Image (tube, rainbow, N blue to C red):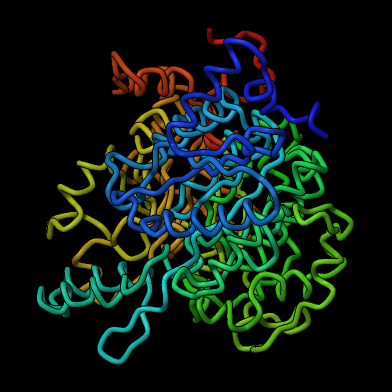
Length: 570
Ligand code: FES
């Protein structure tokens, strides 16, 4: 086995090079035996106090290490840039691709035989998986786990309540004191958002792909069994290296289909589409935005979790978690896909049980008839747009209305609460210049708050359209990821207040009710307001970011370069 170990290209060398590779490691108190042909397992850690959802990852890394030592491996922990969804401006999504480069180059440049990815807050999962795919070593994901369910004045709460509370606060139904009190009630334990937001969706995604041990998605961060899973993952990782089960063997086209079907059944975040497309692109797996609609169309929504449903991730775990959902999906999935524990998906799911049908319904009696995901086409989104019917208003799934256009986010913020704003409940709010290139980074503003004067009348949802994203914890009839974006000359750039727009979710259409000639004439005279950054990463990003329907990866990062490094450093 030793000659197969990549790390021996560093630590197994005689002479000066080997001396240098080993000597400086020994200043950490590492005994000689660790360098003698043991699998070297990297633990890619996104711990940061600026990423509160991942702030417990040092402890988690220790559990992974324990497992690696136990199985005869040699663990080495390394940091990468960590993306905290709540603090990073202008949006963590701007840096997903940058982190993926950090991860890719860190893995390839170092003496690693395999890698455990510690992922939690939204973008920390796709960025790490994307980077690892471009190197293609044996790879396993350990997620940080969701927070415990929040409690506020006798009521269970989670991140989706941020949007409810904000509306109540804006119209004076919630005081500043109550609003502040709710902060600590919601985030009352370690872990990521406690609903089926993007972080939980990503944790489910890696489990459905077969990249984590079964049960990874739902164990709460504060539950001792999270550490057990981390230790077992470290232990398994050593064998994964011995078997040379590389990530590209796990992430087949069939595995991606499993993830899409599973995501639809749990009402996962719309961000899932962007991230899965970007991951597939790194491996050369042929996946396009149409696959999401085709594969999701007949999948019943069975996980009754907020924001599509009623319960929280903690309840999901107690009800059986993702294995119970996937067992319920049964033959809809490719059960012969191999997973990181060396068993097939079907073998992993064989004994999975559901313990609470209120939380995980059956395929025959889903808790809702609405679908988790739909992809729209039409002259307003020539390359596609996305909507999450399960978190929207059924009555608005077929709707025509007059556009009320906001040219950019500052325009929206300046006018949305203006009593003079001409807007009615049946109108359609359009927000542009919040796409990948235009903002830049495609922020989560697509579920823009409703005009205050309509909130005061009791209106709680309207059709909203943007070239931006929506938080996985968000809800509402929001058409997102309109592609091409305004900054790239998409039709959304030339919509004017007063134009009519038709949303037809059943027919999968989004139409600007103008003639082709009028659209062409407006595009011809369109000048645009896009101003590119002139230096640094943001400049690179704006020059190379792809549109949303392709996953918003940088064009030169698509694909991989493998793990081979032919030149030495000394
Ligand atoms: Fe980190 Fe929601 S803010 S998962």
